[in-house]
Image 1: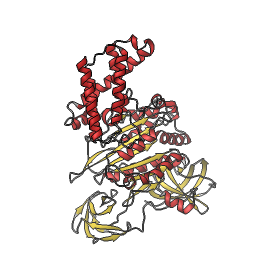
Image 2: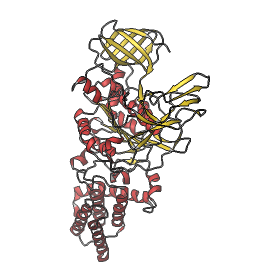
Image 3: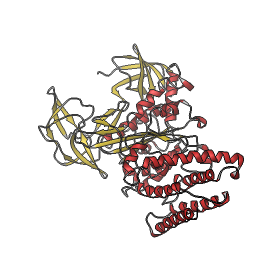
Image 4: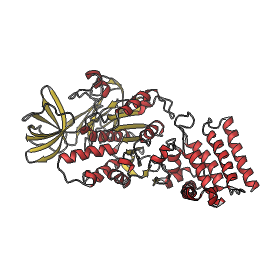
Length: 586
């Protein structure tokens, strides 16, 4: 497609009306020439020979007849070795290099190559002359940290290619031709380590499977009560200050995945800076290597151009899908999808589209669904499996879960982790409310954990019932007092409080309790189950409360002891003995 040109005829903020000559398409990249600066933009609507173009930068200086050049390409991600440990903005500009070029305050119109063109990578060929390959097949590989990064036939290449030559083992830059071939029409083609993919188009090559493997997060309330599967989806709505960002930071540190993609979409700059400062010093508990080695960050903070906010989520999804195609388990965390939706609302308003609920565009639900549907577990021709798990935090105004973004997310995700202001105010962290949260993945995780504890999913459901009964009894006690409820009901309430205090809550500042491995969770949950199953009888309400308070303190202290240490074993035995003594005295 030939490259078209045009001129600006109207401007409304960062939305420009451009009269053009030639052929263009929706989603195409355009460059606005303002003096010696070139501003990146995207075509979002076409009518006749006039296009509406959204500029990703401040449009100061744009005038009538400002020249516009259309690129001929859609908004694309650069994919190849060197993505890991990188920090990009929403358009995949490397922020560290941009800061070095412009200073502390980022200047507009500065666009640098996403991947290092000078760095050499040790290439090991796999394909050979005469091979017939298709998109996604490996030409060779390079080491990237602890991962073997396959160099694949570009996903933008459709059809078959007959390889005529492959580079010898050696060090090459990402722009060096490492393989040549002929397509089905006999035309010559060349391949490098670098490829591009439109960020708004799902990247998928292989057979999509139903998620079946558990994603261990180290959070007991998630892994036990509301688990997530690799290749699944979840959302975490909650009011301001309830701990959404902190929980996502925990998931990025401790989740049992290979790669983590963090998209700070409209997040406050201070929180992003805190992440950037702490991440280089954090050690991955699964590999004992720096956590940054398996992380890619996309930062479009609240202080950056809002127009690029929508692109940042899609950019993260494209990079995550690329690593999934390597057979890796990838976790994409978007914080927050509410601010992404607000960017869509702003764009929709400028386009004068008919608004939906709360002025969000009518297509809000379909856009959110399309984003979460890019998750999934994929099986490739060689039998290898890769997965992409997507988790989005939602920031509903005033903590109202009935608002459109939350409701659209709930309609598509597989797990809902609702955070509560009341729980965060009571310092019950994580502030996930077990009475409103849910998961569709419990039965699948039960199959995986049954070998450790029989009828796992049934036991978790029983724990949830005890929590609900305990909450009902607690509300009754607020009216009539402890003595106004039956002793048997009082015991159910105390069991629910013990489960909440000793198991569902975790201390993020304790080196033992901040991350609870699945093996330790199973051990502790078995102990909690013995309390649930015990038929306690006490003479009075205060005796029951005294017994459970002592039991709570002892079990809580176990969480702070090194797993399977001598003191840990002694503490477990002591608790088990107290339970047996209480049952015997009854």
